[in-house]
Length: 360
Image 1 (tube, rainbow, N blue to C red):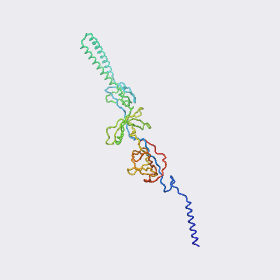
Image 2: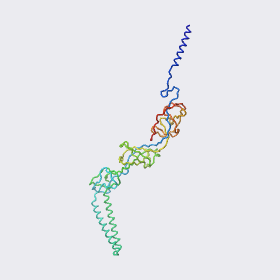
Image 3: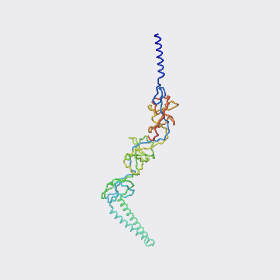
Image 4: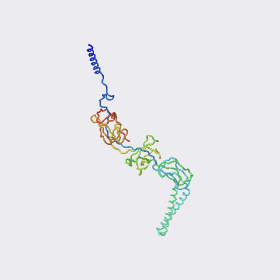
């Protein structure tokens, strides 16, 4: 009796346990995929795309005036009149300063009178020569006197012109450093003159980028004094020597400065776009680095394939692909950390690959 009761209780307990197992809820998979522990991992993929790229060289440069000179006198004398103001814009040939010229003016008047007298004498003798009233030698002597008088007049006129100090080219004057009555010599600075309608911009780049530089490349320069303003120009000259200490080479660009905002000596940030090309790109999040080897996981029939690639430049969250991929390849950009070559996966939707960017 006891044995029968024990067996009955045993079988009832077994059926009860079996019923509990049948009614137990199913355990859900991970939050993103709703899959069980043995389900393939879910990854996000992005296509390899062909985009327009350029290489941007960044450098620092110093501005210089296109033409620059310190105005001085050609001789020693006192200033009789100053005809300019500080910071004035002048044209080529404008008179800036007059030196004392009373004596030279009187000599010029005398020389002019001598020229006129010599001309009248020569003309009179030339008329008589046609009448055969004077010998030819007298006419020749009169012609020589006229030539000498004209030469003396031109000499005095040139010396008088040296007393008018003119602007050698159009530009912006600096501060006036003299006053009327100042005794000046050829080494006395009167003012400075700078042509800043065009700015020379000298900048240095590493010698490794020498192959990318050439005259004619477009330059975009910016200055801290004018935030948001871009000054454009072009590379005009590449230096002939590389600095053996810094291993850098100097290049010169000409930058338009019609508004005269840039001044000589300013520090400017320079950007030069070189090597325009069409290249394969993908988000740099797809890259996995193993020492010096770069590889990615590429989708192939619901499985991933480990593929070694060769990369170029990184361009604002994008990387240039030189070898290993073709246009249209689907590359894993999220969830690749635990992947193995040949592992089955399920793919998610790439909600937006990083936009194409230009520059480095």
